[in-house]
Length: 171
Ligand code: HEC
Ligand code: HEC
Ligand code: HEC
Ligand code: HEC
Ligand code: HEC
Image 1 (tube, helix red, strand yellow):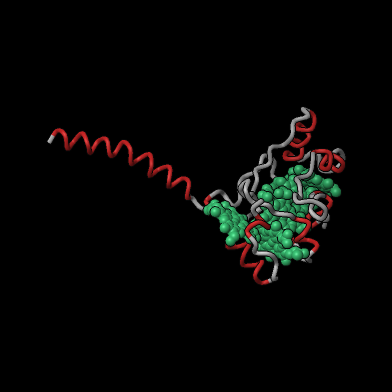
Image 2 (image 1 turned 30 degrees about the horizontal axis):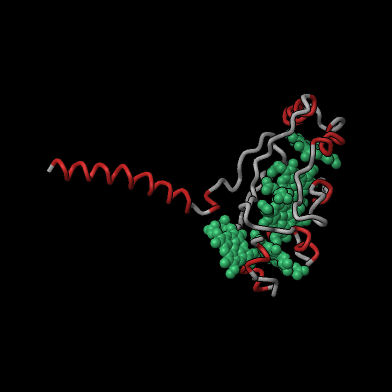
């Protein structure tokens, strides 16, 4: 009986951590918050919607490089030195700029290291931002509505007869 107990305890000690690790490893990517709170309440609805600032004004890489890029403080500063600098969220922004401290925006769309995603090829193929990022210009806070799983990429690649070769995305 004692020996049975010992074996049972050992089994539990080994199996539980293994099960937990396996569970964490297999968590699908979209259990991460699809709409995280940001350090500054930046509104796409206001900037890209109401004021019609072009997406490319802030995400300059999108047509020419794999990464769209998040705008540096200088981009915000050019307007907010003068505009709305009495608002609490803009005051927060100006404090970051004063301290020369970059804002740590929380990523919403993010692929694992082993996947290559070239923005420029998709823009050149005529796809607009909405196709993958939904109606950003009407979002107060960015919200991710796609899975970013491999099947999502492959589905559209089949529709457009783009490459489904493993090496296209895994380099
Ligand atoms: C075919 C789908 C697709 C289209 C079209 C697309 N994106 Fe993306 N975007 C993605 C994916 C996937 C990621 C995540 C990339 C990564 O983590 O490597 C992403 C990431 C981003 C990011 C985060 C920073 C970065 O570069 O990784 C920004 C900003 C962005 N996209 C803006 C845009 C804008 C603006 C447009 C339109 C001009 C656009 N995207 C068009 C799929 C798309
Ligand atoms: C081309 C000019 C321009 C740029 C660039 C710009 N903004 Fe703005 N921003 C505005 C305008 C216009 C308003 C609205 C003022 C109003 O409501 O009267 C605004 C409002 C805001 C507000 C206040 C919203 C509220 O009502 O409380 C915040 C916060 C903000 N912007 C953050 C940013 C950040 C962060 C960046 C850089 C990523 C940025 N802005 C870049 C023009 C700009
Ligand atoms: C005034 C600057 C500005 C404009 C214009 C702008 N963005 Fe952004 N964008 C930002 C900033 C700052 C962030 C990071 C904070 C956040 O997620 O809200 C961001 C984040 C994003 C993200 C999420 C990136 C990630 O993975 O975390 C996407 C997608 C995106 N923008 C798409 C667009 C699209 C599409 C447009 C045009 C309809 C657009 N943006 C217009 C400044 C801008
Ligand atoms: C909404 C449709 C759509 C989605 C979603 C999409 N793609 Fe694409 N992708 C395309 C199209 C169309 C092309 C073809 C561009 C060309 O041939 O000019 C392409 C081309 C590519 C290429 C270049 C292939 C080559 O021939 O070298 C890569 C790499 C790629 N996509 C990766 C991805 C990844 C990774 C994802 C998912 C995270 C993804 N794509 C999601 C439509 C899409
Ligand atoms: C159009 C782009 C694309 C193509 C083509 C593609 N993959 Fe993927 N693959 C992805 C993306 C995106 C992920 C990340 C999915 C995630 O994190 O949920 C991924 C993840 C994976 C993973 C890791 C599994 C996981 O759950 O993280 C393996 C293994 C894999 N792919 C193998 C392949 C093989 C084999 C092929 C060829 C038959 C292939 N892929 C073709 C986009 C692609």
